[in-house]
Image (cartoon, rainbow over all chains, first blue to last red; front, side, top):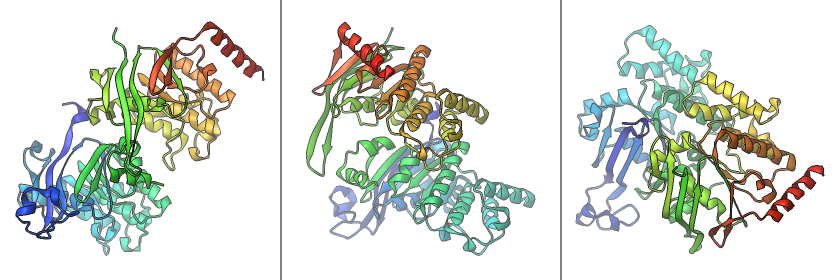
Length: 280
Length: 253
């Protein structure tokens, strides 16, 4: 298979629902009122979302708040139980096993060894009371390293990459600024060399100059390490800068997908046009 | 010999949902571009010139028609039916696009803009550095500007950087979307000499230009966009003479 069409992750029909569902919405999900069923009030956060992620690619996911972007990514990181769907990770058994069907032990293993996640809120991704370096060590230990010297040199290398100064490394992240916390999170997520990295609204809430720093870092990492990434954002500027391809989500569905500049220059759906016209 | 690019009857229209309008941008356009040729398109603004280029580059979604491209990697393929991954590959290695606006990444120096283009293709950093310096020097960009951010550049400098970043990849097909708009005559001459050099090197180019005198002597074929259709334009000798006289006059001024 040629490198440009080597898949890393294949997602098929992920549906995430809150509630049991009823005879009206279980079969046909096209008659929902926004994202819930008007008969049984079951909420569908994601409805039949499918996409492929290729090697070395950045896939952007945009959409309004509540459109199911974060739900999707968090489901892929096994943080939320998924009702239905198939996910194939090609570094795991050559993509022959649906990783949603594995045991919880296997899921934990996959999470520790082949997935990485960066949250909008650093409190979710970091242990605030431990030092920056031990946060990274924690993930390295989870991924199987046992040699103390190796762990510390590896952690220091990662903190070099994300440019955390040496004298701050033994401080707790709770004393760091927002941008620094985000960079430590990125280092932590990278520590197990994941083939896939999820970034959930990483730059939201940061000021522009710090945001540019974080984006620079992401771009550099992507180029140097050739990691595939899924970037969730409601900031079209971020997507425009980083993503090769983009999915647009609305009310739990992917309403449009394509090359990023095609989405921005020739949007087809009414919602996407509205979104693009709102870009500053 | 197969042509490098063959456009057959493409049409493109836009639906604007917010004002409920349907706009036709170009209608059944056909065009053939042979290897090593330079073809220019002229026309009024809003006549759909850029639409053609953007359709080739797939910034616009295909609607009707076929665009055949003779690719090094994929052979003879229809760009309108190619997968997104194939398009990304082609953009990276084979097709370049220069618009009159520079897409600037924040906090990226001019040198990095060009280096990144080389690194993207998978070359190592030393090669990228050497190549970037060579092309920046070639484009006569002031050496003091190399390590500053393009946001402070003048229009002409931005444009030259833009062209440099596209040309350093040595694309097989280069799409030029009004690269001389809003430039003074001296800058235009620089762009012109560059295009001439590229043409000598064998790059196939399709360009949109406003001024006929710029295209004079440069284009192998000229098309004019009229009522959403392309018409081939034969340069009449008198017109050519006038154009050359005009450019001579400009030079003396």
